[in-house]
Length: 232
Image (cartoon, rainbow, N blue to C red):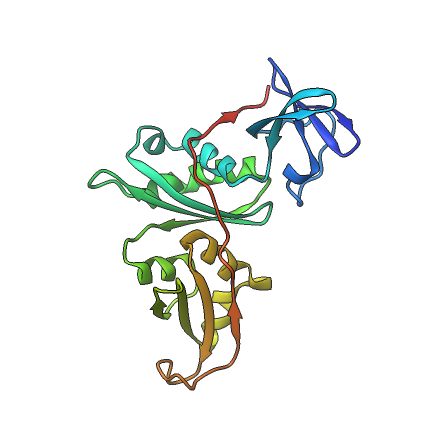
């Protein structure tokens, strides 16, 4: 619960301890108010001029890990694992999941019946859109899935430079890129590969077919054991 504000820092009461939510750990799409109940990720203990403080986060990708671990029993018992999370805090997240047991559907487990599980996580993240992506050892298939909802993509890989060239039909190019480049940026962060989207018309395999190319730089994302503290 938001106890008070110290400038731009929100002081969060977790019951047994007071924690600090600094501006750099706040979601850019959220506005906090007194007595608001929040679920936060306990990130670190930071030394400050006023002594050690517990720093919590609302924009750390590991908050998503922890929320799914709380909502999805298959994650808690290890039948489903989160391979990676790429996040645009407050707007959209892509999460890659895999199963460790035969017959367990990792995507279905995270979505839940009638979407109840993923909706519970979305509600905790103030409406943030969540794409659940099936992990695939086949990099081409994984990149295709990460770029959903675009389809019909043709992918070539430059393994030396860890760069993927994705050829999209004209009607799929904007979908693959996403508004402001969001979709391709998150897909790049999720897969760990730089992705170039190249538009094509009728002959997508030709090297001369080109319209617009969007280049992304991969971002480091972390997946650690969930460490979540519910609000009090």
